[in-house]
Amino acid sequence: MDLSVIIVNYNVKYFLENTIRSVKETVMGLSYEIIVIDNASKDGSMEHIVSKFSDVNYIYNESNLGFAKANNQGLKLALGDYILILNPDTIVKEKSIDMLIDYLKKHPETGLATCKIIGPEGTLDASCHRSFPTIWNSFCHLSGLSRLFPDSKVFASYNLLYLKDDRIAEVDAVSGSFMLFSREIIDKGVYMPEDYFMYGEDIDFCYQIKKQGYKIEYVPIADVIHYRGQSSKKDKIKLRKYFFESMKIFVKKNYTSKYSFFYKFILDITIMFSYLISIGKIIFRIYLLPIIDIISYAVGLWTAVFLYRPVLLFLGKIDKSTFPDINLEMYLGVSGIYIAIILLIFYLTGIYKEYKFSYKKFILSAIYIALITLSITYFMKIFAYSRITLALLLSISIPLMLGWRYILLRKMKFFLDKTLIVGIDEVSMELIQLENDLADDGKIIVGYVDTDDKYLGKSIDKFAVLGSIENLKEIMKIEEASSIIFSLKSISLAKILVFRDMLEYANISYKILPDLIQKKNGRINYINLSQ
Image 1: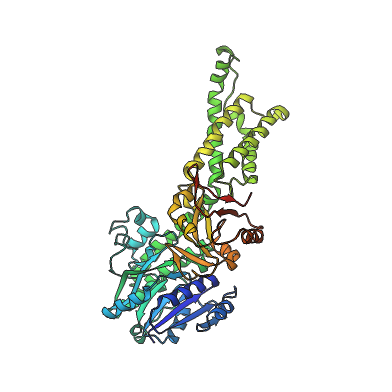
Image 2: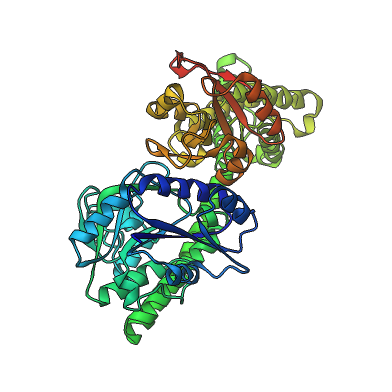
């Protein structure tokens, strides 16, 4: 047998189905087997895959053994001359496996090879070529110095960011999402190190192969799309913990005890700060818009108080000798009420969630805020600002809130609504060329959904086909999508309405792409089903 493909699965049955389809379509003229090791999935993966692929050797574990132990199960069953360890959330492009096997045959000194691994946003997955961890490169990687100086061999050596993406290179280690190697490796007793539960085993596996005298190579003559961490994407802080623990295990196992102790000490300090940064990022993402609104309010209040006297003088309400004793502290006591009103109205009208890119909704919300706050000056005078102060405050803070949104929202990708394109045809494929226009609408494509199963296991440019429309509900949950664009050329309006009603419970934005993409006022013109 030419090839054994080993896939470890955990609760990603639809991604696994696509991965298997892509493998079957890319192995040209090779005899092969596919071995799936399931780490106690609870989503019905086994039943789903076995019903669709009777030739897949499916092994179900009663407990989650971790990535390394599960792969070793597969390695002990493998019969192929070449073995591919593959993640269940990858799409293998046409002829990729064949080309890499040919490369290994021509270069027997290469013990293991990987290809170009493309992330879900179309960029290179930096983990597909790495160095072994040292104190310095780990510090640069974890502190972000490597991202600040990606072309520097001094600062960017952990992920070798300075390497050319399209050039073959000898490296220390590659990503465990795609590892192709000769059977000679396991015949020499080199298996996945089982000291690790998650992360680190791929680096250690490469380390053990290099100790046998083989090269590890990054070979970008082929490529795959990798939707990183689909089977473990929920608890990011816990995953970061696994990552750090794996680094400590690797150093303790493979380096001298003195170096290992010092490395562990440095890493423990880094872990503490990294946890704080991780928590800070989560808080930043959730609360950035409300914080900006509070800051805008504070700036507006300070400016309004500063301008209060000049405005009264201009209107002739006072003269220079009768200026009232007003200062900022007078307003701080009641500011909490006004801030609460602003935040509550924005929250209730969806400005912090599904309508964060809607200027119409923002203006409508601003009108509500103005009406309610102005009414306070008449009916609840104990809590009221002066009418001039309030008018100045609103006329300054509301434009500030709108301006910050315009500047920030489209610059930060995590604010964009994850969008599924349902239907694959020449019209929906045009959206790939219109990513900037979609960003102006607050959307970012996460993948395509097939309506007639012709494209399952394939990719559309840099975007994977995530599954069939029958599984749209599950795909949306997995991808955490908040927006759908239906292509009318691939799915009828009647079916679109059925799926809309099926997903009615969720806060989803629905659009219909007509048979011809047109723009109105510089934006894509489509039908808004939410209305």
